[in-house]
Amino acid sequence: MPETVTDDQIMPEHGVRRLYTAAMMAEVLGVSPAAVRHWVRERLLEPVRCSSSLEWFDFSQLVVGRNLGRLLRGGLSLREIDAKLADLVAGGGPAAAQATDRIVADGRRLSLKCGDRLLSGGGQLQLPFYTSSLVMADEPIDAVPAVRLIDMAAARVAATSPQPGIERDAAAEATEILDLADDLEAAGEFAEAAEALRAVLQAQGPSAAVMFTLAELLYRAGDLTAARERYYATIEIDPEHLRARASLGCVLAELGEHELALAALEGVLRQEPDYADAHWHIAGVLHDVGRSRDARHHLATFLTLAPESPWADLARQRLET
Image (cartoon, rainbow, N blue to C red):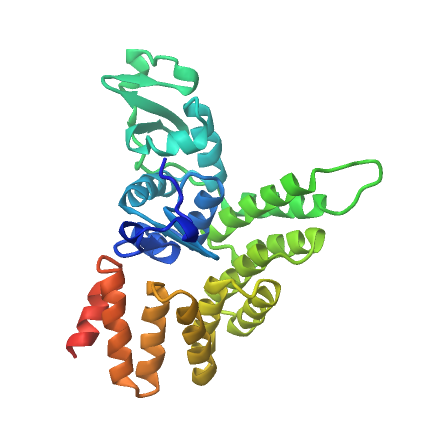
């Protein structure tokens, strides 16, 4: 499991060049941002560098994410993946995540391939007549119906209301609802996911992390005005939340407020000059306002920082034209 490198420990060889941000990971893996966010929260993915709200991942974590994505596309929900991985390896989910390239599936049952043997949860050897039917975990199975996820969300949101004589672990309750919101977002049920997040905010009060997640969800749902206000609220809670500032710049640009967008993105780059995503976004805004030379500078910087980004080919095309 990679060791996270903090800003005060960073060495030149641990720079962010050729690393992937969370947004890049989601794009490369073909999964929703909620999936990447969820896997980081559950420690199935481990960033190799953190700075404020920003996280970077190396190629080894990209491989882990690709294998987790196979399970997700196979029809398992995010929470099902958590539970099944935790049962599969003695070290729990984080340890199992590092072995996802050896996981095979039979319906919703997962097994771990060890040489020519297959082991179930707890290390029990699978018998030959059973193992012959096992396949790699990217074969689709029936996904959890969205309507079931919505019913589960409604039940969990209702459970946050105080009930006489019942004490609840607020932190565990919030984590469960956040996990459910991730599943709903991954299933494309944005309105229900947003209600789940609002329930957490109502129960626990303002939180930069939850507020930012809600803003991202509203942005994906196409409600730019509501997303803008939630990004502002995130920054009010945590002025150092650079991902919120960068996302706010994108929303402002889409709403036609280009000067405010540039101010937001320039502020991000003053604090974190190596944030490749911000260079990519500011290049687009500069191009839109006719500042092509400045846009080219940021595109070139973006390619230096993230030459293998999913947006790298497009950046090269724009530089050529």
